[in-house]
Length: 132
Image 1: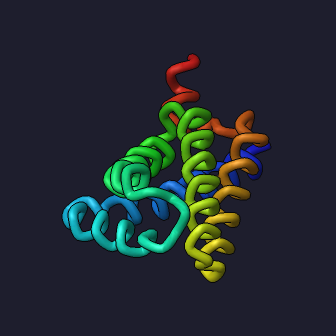
Image 2: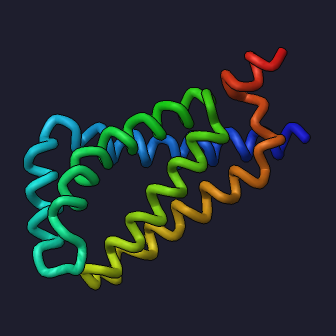
């Protein structure tokens, strides 16, 4: 059981750091990130009125999911939110035919769902301390 908990912890931290890092580097340049995303979707079927709020929200979402996973707080909710964001990103990537990035997004989604299925091993977390 210890090995499963350690493996869970290490995987949760790894995907948490990935999400945290994605959000952290984008937050200081949020306007530039938004402009890049809006420009990328100019020729897609998705209207700018939907792209703009998502582009502003994504870095914040990534940052928050990352922090929650790193500390192990609201882990289940963070995993669901992380997977939902990956599903949205996969859809967006297909709309602009950016096939090269989908593999990374699907791997993140797979890790999120794997962690969700094995949530019972989430002992090294704030969540586990709060249950006691």
